Image 1 (cartoon, helix red, strand yellow):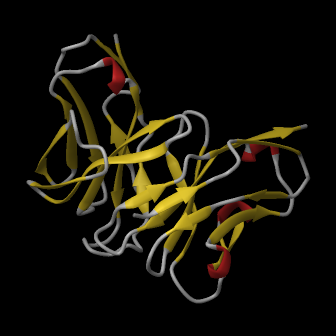
Image 2 (tube, rainbow over the protein chains, first blue to last red):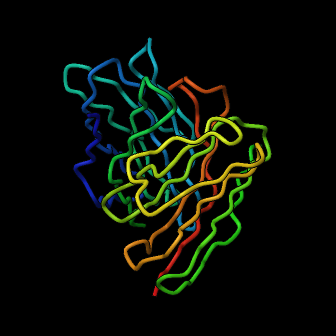
Length: 113
Length: 116
């Protein structure tokens, strides 16, 4: 069965510092991978997604993620974090059968001034 | 912009009550989903629907049912609420036909349900 692991439950970074959020997946076939962000009191918003092709994917708000098949990873990065990036981030893998997504447990990002 | 709305942001119910959570999307999406979100567990799929009157069980359907009588509306029903159903419930819809894993899901703001 497919699964997604986000090893870091909480991360704190200083404003302006770089960010990397880790995501590891377990899936038998070629994965479809997603990163979503949930700001306080909001629903989830898609940051970026990977289906095929270039393994470095650009998303909204200056985020990018790199698919590494050999490491079963899809880590999210941002070169310079802004205070408004404080939120919870979820990695997800899509299934071939139907439209179901399996989500990781989430990483809560806090940004220090 | 796609809009997914949920009938309540906060709801407090008593054990044994029947609870209805309503979700409406305004973009004519075929697929709709109900998830529950719990700290450390991420989102877990309860049910999804790929057409009117059609439904499929997700990962944790026990204790829940769903109804989809109109394309834009997807209801989650707790027949007899229990304290372990206290959670955040998120509705989503996606933007293409059924059967594609590449679809983007659009989420509502969530309903925080407390069962006393």
